[in-house]
Length: 246
Image (cartoon, rainbow, N blue to C red; front, side, top):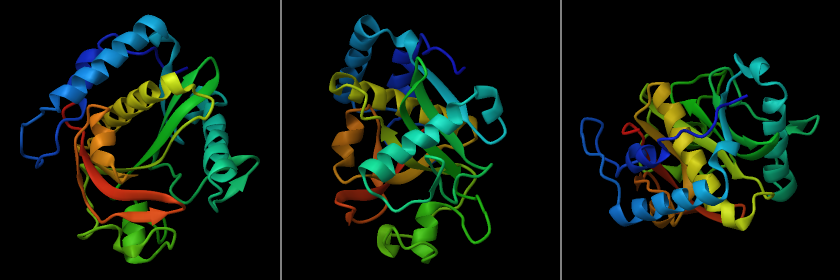
């Protein structure tokens, strides 16, 4: 299931997530120092950790049957992270965490190795609709959900075919510290690829408040979309990431 890590990952990371710019801009320059650091880490990883062992799968309701138990294992991994570890008040059944945004419109990007879930993230089009729900940031701003402050965004939530939202990012606690940044880097590259495959040029989401430093370590660029907020002990901020350069 999935596929082996691509051989041209160095080139992909170099151009995957440049500094954010208007959709019409052709700029794709990522911060040089951070990209070099990231590429160095990737080369070390490939040499010492065996890049071919990690598989990345993009799951949907339509293709989940082709991946065996992977989708169920992904939702169980989410439960372990968000409910068991972070104590978030979220729906669950049969050991799996889910919510109203896990629909046929969403895509789940999963990194796995020898049957173990390493990391995952979910993306959803900002034009998605399911009953009274659209996507998480917009629903928070409109007061449809109360788990995120309504003032999470400075401006009206974007709704466009070329903008998708990323949520439920996690790296398994079973991933050793020496591999965590690498696994997270791979996850973000695969997330960007999946979004671009769906026609997106930008991805919005809530990221750590120190996102510039955090994202630069991944060779990414982004701009803030809202103020600093604290939820469940974590200080975060809405941001938009440019992924069209991948």
